[in-house]
Image (cartoon, rainbow, N blue to C red; front, side, top):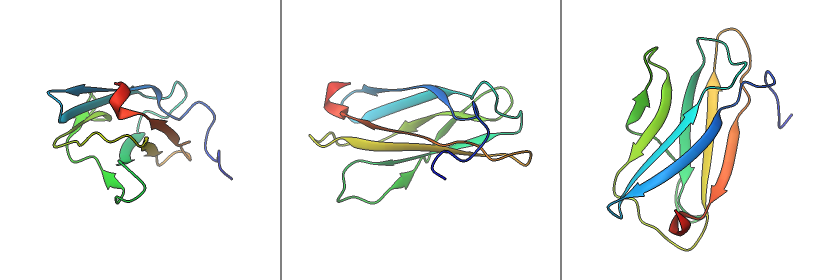
Length: 106
């Protein structure tokens, strides 16, 4: 099922900011009902023609959980970029979060 996983375990408040034209910082908060051991992973695809890439530089919270990502050498096109954050936990399935964002608007 598309929404498999514990309700309320997907990330919340996902947002991205672009600095100096080619640096992008994306952040999020853990899902309200996500188990404490949940670890999140961010993937993005700048356009349909490019390969999906995982974050190379995660921002971690005090519990070493991934709560953001810094992307370098970002190129901003007119196509919407696709972002996917999935999670894993030994206790339960975690819902994923995905969104299409117009990078030129941020």
